[in-house]
View (cartoon, rainbow, N blue to C red):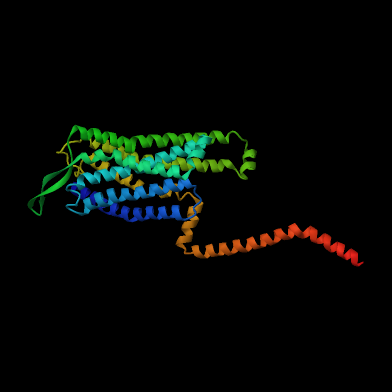
Length: 363
């Protein structure tokens, strides 16, 4: 029964990770196209942050899910169980993970500053500032991920395959004190601190919006916005809460289990592939949730936009060109009639006066 349970869980992961790649990578690339090249009603800064997030998440899916996990479950000897790929892959994985987490954090902090401080809105609304910020996040994230290339080492391991003993190189965790220290620091930088900051600043944004709405009466809000603001406020807070809860729920389990695995079970004798041990099952489930987060960001940040949904429907139904052509013709026609009417209005009184005078002279 235990072997059957292990086999089922391994089979689930063998199907889950390729499916995540097949769905997630095209979804992120499609999101990047929609955000950058379609009119989705987003600000310039939001376009830069979200497009950068989509690209970084795509690299995360490639390094972690495709090359690492998918090959681990489908191949006996993936290529990264050798020098120098054992170190390079760890650096690339944590570089993309840190970049994804901190882009979400900085974007959330920027939204709070823009909402709270008037001067910050003028500064952060500049596109070149946002671009430099995203580049800096990616570079610093990869820079602090360099030590992650030192925590693994390639060692020879004996395996029994079809009744024969085979020795193959394996990329294994280095059982050293500095490896544990690096793991703790990196895990907090990529998981613990971002989770706390996202919760805090989303709470501050919601609190500020609630206070701002209480400064005006219901009638005043209707006059300013033309409709009830409280419904819009609830939807905004719901969106912020959804983003926070999704990020925390999908990231926190991995943060906890990874710390436990790399501290309490940090030894060469521990069999990470033994699913009779509860922490191994919990660790893999937490990884599945964490990796799912990189494929659903576009749903949380983009699909809430009505303009995004309209553009998506137009592309899927192949009505984009027809609607654009109709819009151009309508706009041009309306512009011509508007100009003509404008000229008639400007010249109607002088013409009437002149014609009246001419009639009076003939009489």
